[in-house]
Amino acid sequence: MTTIAVLGAGKIGEALLSGLLQAGRSPQDLMFCERHPERSAELTRRYGVRGVDLATAAGADVLVVAVKPQDIDPLLKELAPHVTPRTLVVSLCAGLPTTLFERCLPEGTPVVRVMPNTPMVVGEAMSAVSGGRHARPEHLELVEELLGSVGKVVRVPESQQDAVTALSGSGPAYFFYLVEAMIDAGILLGIPRAVATQLIIQSAVGAATMLRDTGEHPVTLREAVTSPAGTTIMAIRELERHGVRAAMLAAIEAARDRSVELGRAHETD
Image (cartoon, helix red, strand yellow):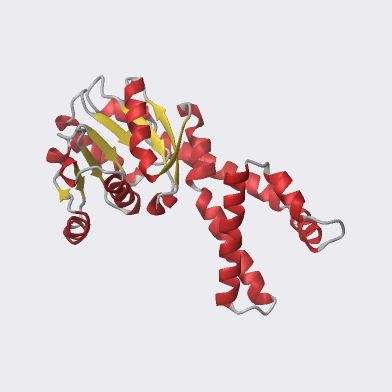
C-alpha cells in the first residue's frame, strides 16, 4: 500500500487526511507533520494517524505539501536531504510552480502541482492537477485517485494553474461574499437574519445542484427564472447597471495576477 505524509495539517491538510480515511485508506499508511504539539495530538486522537517529524515523513511514498506559500523555502531546504527521486511530491501551495520544487529537491524528483479549494472540508473540493517535468502519467493518476476521495478533479496544463487558482481556488470566497450580501439584503427588507440565512443558503444549494445535475447552461437556468417585466429581470437590470459582471471579471483577473506574483517571489536569477 502507498504511504502518504501530509506536511502541514491545517484545514486543507486535515480534510485530505479525513477524506483518505473515509475512502478506505488505513491510518497506518498515513502520517502528518504539524508544528504545534497540541494540534498534532488532537489530530492523532481524532483520526488515529501518526504525527511525525519531517525526516520520518520524507520516507513516505507520497509527500503532500500543504503549507502556506511563505513557509515553503525553509521547508524545502529542510526536506531536500531526506527526499529521493522515488518520492512523489504533491504541492497544494497556491501560486508555487513545480520548477521551484524541482530546483530545491534532488534531480529527477516527480512533482505534481494541485490547486484544491476549501470545500474539501465537506468532501466537495474542486481540484486541478498539473505534472512537473519528471511526473509520469502514473503519478498524475495516483494524485487524481487521492484527490477523488475529497471531491472532483481535472487535469490542466501548469500554464493555466494561476487562472485556476483565481477561479476555483478562490472561488468559494466569491460565493460566500455573494451569500453574505444577499442575507444583508433580506435584513434590509425586514426579514429576520436567521430566516434570511436559511432562505439564501438553501437557494444557493439548490441552484448549485441544478447546475451540476441538469447539465444546462447557467444562462438557460437564469432565463427560466426571468419572466418578462417580472421581479428577476428588474434585479438583473440593477446588477448590470452597477457593473457586477465587470467587477467579477476584474476581481478574478486580480486574483490570477496575485497567484503569478506568489510564484515569481521564489524565482532566482
